[in-house]
Image (cartoon, rainbow over all chains, first blue to last red; front, side):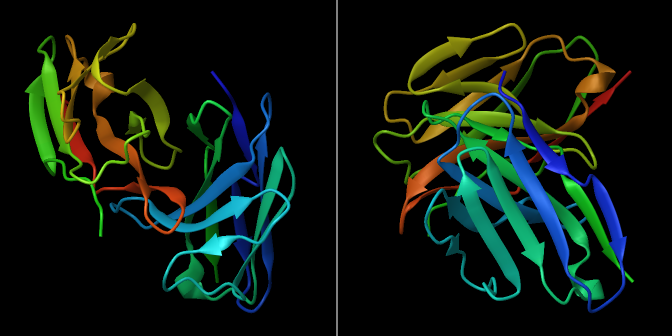
Length: 114
Length: 111
């Protein structure tokens, strides 16, 4: 099956710093990628839809200036958590959709903000 | 707001067949139904996908009635390693094509 990678797999940062997470589709092109966050023992919550070459579409309640998304190519989307705070600590997961409308998920990135 | 509904949790024993049903009343006409498995601290893993009737692969079967307002994931002869959270995922064409996760079903397989 198709492979989606994320980097880094985990990151620890100080409060106030910015963190960038990369999501790559390794063997297919993805015009659409999604970013989710997941808190312990909860379901995945969709944060935004990332479309190649255009602005991301954010879900209600997700601050676009806080979570910057860039989808510069058909295989790469990045999520930057700006001025991170402890409440941003979470498990961030991306997914990519191929031309057959199949959606594949990355392994996730554990963000811990001290 | 369109959403999926699944049982919160299920228990089973090794070797049994497990059926998990998901309701999705507002499914889009052209959308597929996909089931994922998730272990702690990992991304969801694709299990099976279907549009209507029945789909079977090497790990599961997916049953979808004609009205497509629900679907049932069938796991034959589960093992301890099948203990995980299972999500059904459909795309809802509200405000753009996007997929929303429901709460998922926590399956616990006992020896």
